[in-house]
Length: 256
Image (cartoon, rainbow, N blue to C red; front, side):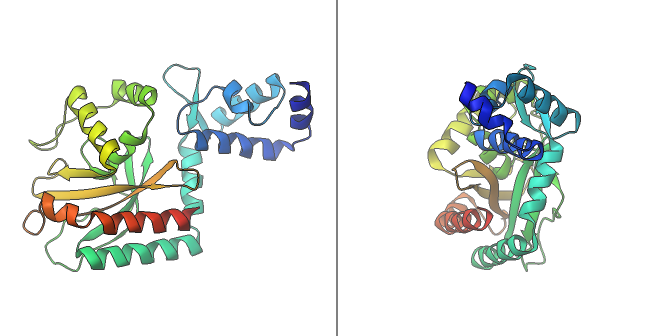
């Protein structure tokens, strides 16, 4: 511990905060300051002081236990800004265009935020009859393909903490509103590697989403496509699964 502390003491303060963010973002689950510090090696007082400062400034937030830390909205805004740098945004948008042309439907790139999945980028279908959810829209976790992909990526302990506070509001007769039913659905998504929205957010709309991972294999975002039931059903959605997975791999490479 003395060697680690000496190494940590030589790290510049501005780099220390970035290293803390890197550890929290890469973990995929809440961490205590001590757990964060295992990879950094700062003095105990320093890691607690820096974490408290990052909480005060809106980069970190405590989970409901009050002991562990998660990225806060300000950190996620920064992450989205990096992903939306001109080079990444252009390359990502080209992938979405290709997927939209191949599926014939609207394609979305969404990232999790505190209050739901946020549409960061999208390409609209050329069909006149379509359901429009513009960039910046937020949709619930429990009744969308993108949101269920995210929930399915969470470690069991974190998922249980989320389910305790998640409002499972009913949007349509197909919305999953029970915790046990949602757990079962998420288990299938983890096993299959994709999620389907079967008219759970809007009646007459179905969607399929697959996860996009970073270079460490952690959940980053979801790429999905949706359309009306006049053109799509559950069978036709799955026919595009390999295409969507290939698009997710391309997006992972762009974002890494």
